Image (cartoon, rainbow, N blue to C red; front, side, top):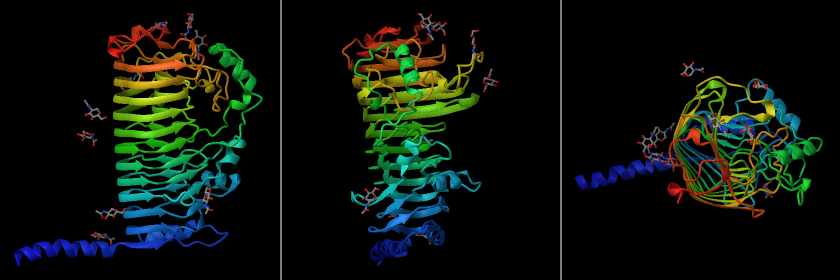
Length: 454
Ligand SMILES: *[C@@H]1O[C@H](CO)[C@@H](O)[C@H](O)[C@H]1NC(C)=O
Ligand SMILES: *[C@@H]1O[C@H](CO)[C@@H](O)[C@H](O)[C@H]1NC(C)=O
Ligand SMILES: *[C@@H]1O[C@H](CO)[C@@H](O)[C@H](O)[C@H]1NC(C)=O
Ligand SMILES: *[C@@H]1O[C@H](CO)[C@@H](O)[C@H](O)[C@H]1NC(C)=O
Ligand SMILES: *[C@@H]1O[C@H](CO)[C@@H](O)[C@H](O)[C@H]1NC(C)=O
Ligand SMILES: *[C@@H]1O[C@H](CO)[C@@H](O)[C@H](O)[C@H]1NC(C)=O
Ligand SMILES: *[C@@H]1O[C@H](CO)[C@@H](O)[C@H](O)[C@H]1NC(C)=O
Ligand SMILES: *[C@@H]1O[C@H](CO)[C@@H](O)[C@H](O)[C@H]1NC(C)=O
Ligand SMILES: *[C@@H]1O[C@H](CO)[C@@H](O)[C@H](O)[C@H]1NC(C)=O
């Protein structure tokens, strides 16, 4: 009897759990906003439920939504979702006082899954971003998905088509697994601020004295700025098998992040696998234990990147970038503790002795090509360009722009690069700012591996 009860009880509990789980289909009305129906559905079923956007339907996500706290809920997107196909409508919503911060904002909860579809024809969230990029419209752009304060969450199989700007953010989340997601923020057209382009290009040529030959204005991408892929805030987060084509950071790890893993992914067109920016406006940063590996960086401004602002504070430690293949990347490895957006004015003559300290940064096994052929990236709309590096040659595989006495144990090992023009690969590093062997000769000159870098 005892044995039978011991078997029966868990079985009954299991059946009860299964029975308690329901699926609710989001209602759809043609030519009307489906968000109010979605909100009332999820408000009445914030636990033990699947909220389903069904295949075969294109839902109108015409207003921003803030979900209630959810427990054991799966939001499953098998139909298509469309943002308003009109810039002014979105701007009015984003600019209104009640805007929750993102177009889809989660408020926390436990065991929450955001799941798309593996059907290539369905499960797309269409942001109609092209018109925003073509108009260089940056006022009141919406963030996409704020997966905030979720404990034990999953983001999988999501497919974003031409999202306007920032995509997934996990601030305050704990134990999140984000995998098999697709973000396609690539632009069909090649617009730049044409009036600015000649100045910008000339300035770049001054900074990076490459030949004008072969350069084409049409090769400049469009302004799909700030279409960051994943903004990792929180603890114990794993991102893998994600595919991102965008115009800003592929991954950006923010202040407070701990235990972040990113692997087996593809990033194209953006600004790199980034930590920061940290320490803006003198703030105190805290980032620890970040492991990034097995990622392809294609046509990107940066590969691996760290930036903390001039005058900041705090610590970033134990960060590894490993097995990074880069193709046509301008700055494969770039670390600055002296970040300043040159687009907003000259660097301040700071007298502060504070800055964000960095410790135990490892770059290991990088291979690929450096874009040293006169690239003007779409985000370069100021003069000097925000990413211009004084005295750089454009052939640097690694730039360490460090603050004296505040960077320790930085190592670049097994770094293999060629430039697209075939000219020698260079490095930028100031030996008064480092104490250990960083893996290459620390100077502004040819890239020469040292003992620690072999
Ligand atoms: C959800 O299901 C669990 C059992 O799996 C149960 O304990 C809990 O009360 C349910 N919550 C609601 C709101 O129904
Ligand atoms: C968590 O949610 C998933 C569906 O997303 C469900 O299958 C599972 O039973 C939930 N876990 C618990 C402990 O309720
Ligand atoms: C769903 O949306 C995507 C992206 O806009 C589109 O390519 C696809 O054709 C849509 N699916 C259907 C069945 O309309
Ligand atoms: C980070 O991971 C380490 C090692 O797995 C673990 O000991 C630590 O508790 C984690 N930190 C947090 C804040 O969860
Ligand atoms: C460094 O981070 C890794 C995860 O990326 C973790 O496994 C390891 O325990 C951390 N080491 C220290 C000394 O914190
Ligand atoms: C910084 O100091 C230099 C030299 O004194 C001066 O030319 C420059 O204008 C100063 N920059 C700012 C932003 O104050
Ligand atoms: C440096 O940081 C410390 C600790 O956060 C703070 O008390 C101090 O005011 C900072 N100094 C400057 C010059 O910013
Ligand atoms: C650039 O190089 C020149 C000549 O070596 C030097 O005087 C100047 O200080 C350098 N500028 C920076 C910002 O390192
Ligand atoms: C190297 O750094 C020191 C300390 O910040 C600075 O004084 C020096 O000008 C730097 N050298 C170069 C070549 O930038």
